[in-house]
Image (cartoon, rainbow, N blue to C red; front, top):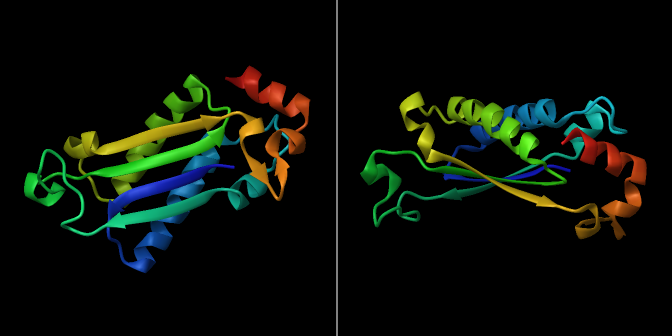
Length: 148
């Protein structure tokens, strides 16, 4: 159940839709495992993209706004259960160019794209009143652990 919270400059609503669609497609491509019990469509339906935009005078780095620094600052916080180091590396490498593309960040500005991972155990997340560990059978949890 990937959850992305994007801290970024304000965007028009139509552009948010485009960004959300591209990021959802990318996350689902990078995280889909055909050996798992979830289909690509189910993964897509469970991927959440949440925008937390900032106005020009609301974010400061080193006491200056990104605009004053002539720099971009976009942070993606990605939460999902059981993310291994290998998965985080693949996500960072695959997600960064897509974020750069949808936010029109030139290659020289990629250092302003930050991804923070929040991995959790299936017993630390509940859906509909049931722990994820109750919803995902032990064999599914084992397979996800082995894929790391």
